[in-house]
Image 1 (tube, one colour):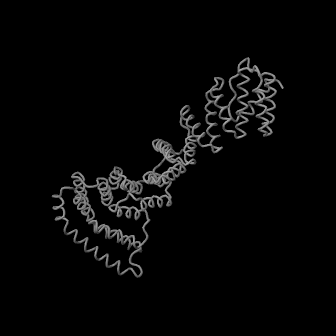
Image 2 (cartoon, one colour):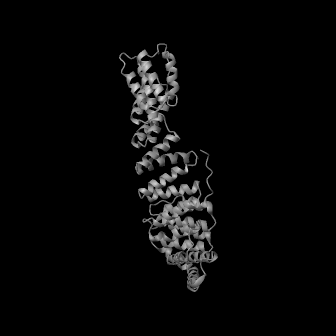
Image 3 (cartoon, rainbow, N blue to C red):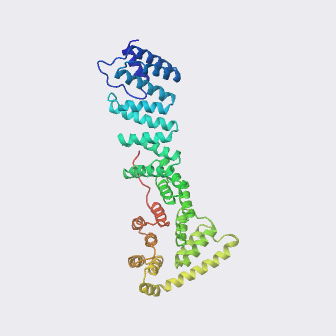
Amino acid sequence: MSSHLLRISLFATVAFAFAQPLAHAEDTLGLDVGKALQQAQSALAGHNYTKAMAAVDQADAVKGKTEYDAYTITQMRAAVATQAGDVAAASAAYDKLIASPRTPKATKQQMLMSEGTMAYTAKNYPQAIKAIERYQHEVGSNPTMDTLLAQSYYLQKDYANAIRVLKSQIDAEVKAKKAPAESQLQMLAASATALKDSTTSTHAYVMLATYYPKKEYWDLLLHELIVNAKIPPALQLDVYRIRLAAGNVTQTRDFMDMTEIAVQAGLPQLGLDLMNQGYAANVLGQGAEAPRQARLKAMVEKAAADKKAALAADEAAATKAKTGDDLLTVGYNTVLYGDADKGLGLMQQAISKGVNDPNLAKLHYGLAQMQAGKKADAIATLKTVDGDNGTHDIAQLWVLKLSPAPVAAKK
């Protein structure tokens, strides 16, 4: 076999890994190098990788090799090491080929990709991370490589870096109006859960419920709220309300509990409205507990009537208070009793005056807007709610609940 024919067959063998380099007029293999590489090719075709690599080493040991001899030997070494799964040897060979001016730019990019995917397949995640980050630096973003990078961090339990990489990828996809992959969001949630980062895990589940609206994601979302140790007692009623809106409240004790919390918060009409939902769902008013529930309802009805009668006096007293917290409650009650415009105005005054928890106030203002039938305004308000004590999470769930499903571009 002539050296020219050998060169052609060699490239046929390694075509899976890289394209044929640019040839020069003087590009011919030395006789001894050609014979050794022919043996390597035959052994590689028979999947005898040990014999194939030995033949490559034999070719490499030939004295007086030309630059082209060395380049072709490195190609065959890369091919043998790749098929043998020898990540270290293959990566070293790829690096030499990438550094060579003989290798076209597109082929170098393919080799960089091969280094990363090969290391990942071999479960050599540190090497995969190094190779993929080099690819990203020299070539740019690639969906497959981006995913492998996040998975490499995740699989070696470097959850902090997995979150960093995933957030960057997901933010870019959302900005481009593309739906993040469900697996990406699941990995983000799992990484955050492993680090006990409730803010990030809730955010991940919000996005899962947004783009992949399944009951299981809503259940996980609500579970995150229930077990979140940062949520103060002042938000327990709000947790119950979003659970109720999502169909997650089905127990008698939950309806009784949220009713009592609403009354204690100075919102008896809200408590009565919640209790009536329990009766409408046939959760309350059934069985041996029905008389006790009826007594509680009668008490709440009286409290609601008394509060309505005292609204004017409450407003006068709240207006004189140093902070707007009492006025916020008066405004909320005013909305609940049917005077939405006045009530919302009072709540705005309260927030402007200054309240103990501005984010909680905005959350309740958004819910009052929802109560008044101003859904678009409610969504806009709820989107402004911040805080790391649960107010932001609850507000985002209401935004998700009130908003139409996003129409994302196909990936």
